[in-house]
Length: 343
Image (cartoon, rainbow, N blue to C red):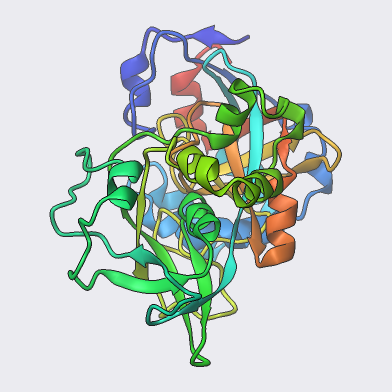
């Protein structure tokens, strides 16, 4: 039975943020997971082991060591050491998608490539609010400081690169660079899609990344103001040490994997934990993923962003994902029953 815990303190040892009185936990049986027996557990185990050694809670250490050296049957490994836990904060499940863009750019400003992406200024500190997006873009705070990494041709591409947090840029000189998350200005993310619906421009079912992109390009003045509705601003760093065949770096500073990595809220889901996904919609998804990433818009116990891959096709697919469903965190047995002792 689902149990509301008075032991919100107990979750702090497992998750990175405190649970509140509305958070509840229930331990389910493996038979309750729709499609569990049909998944490729070996593929999920390989992704899990990429980041498992970085998990610091002592309950994960022996599990990671066994998975790395002794697990022969991946499904049996997960069923032996974990229990699926449904974590609820009272909000319905929501799945979206994200991807790694591939863009054209320049190492120097040109008449075509004139919209920069920046390294983090030294005065910007984690957890502190700095200038808003509008203040940055409408001011001259970066002028002459040499913080530019590259220049892009379209401010909408810059904005969506901020949303995705990483990307590959093909340069006009024939070279290429890869950029990853380097910091943020400390302001909360605001959805420009939600703002377009609030203004009556579109209905909620009409909004997608492609629709937003077209509307901003067709309405350059109003479009600039719309993008600045989101005060959050992302800084980047070059991550050229990551091989081209590997995915971008996630929040655990490891490459993430298409359709096996999710971004989740670490207040409810430990970074590195396996998570069973049951996503509805036109393209249902039932598989074991790993929470290897986070995002400023990903808040809540049943909220996840599915990493789709790299490039244009991945971006198109990611933009279509906005579906309901549920997710269950696979936690070490002792942890699971400590959180939900009556599960």
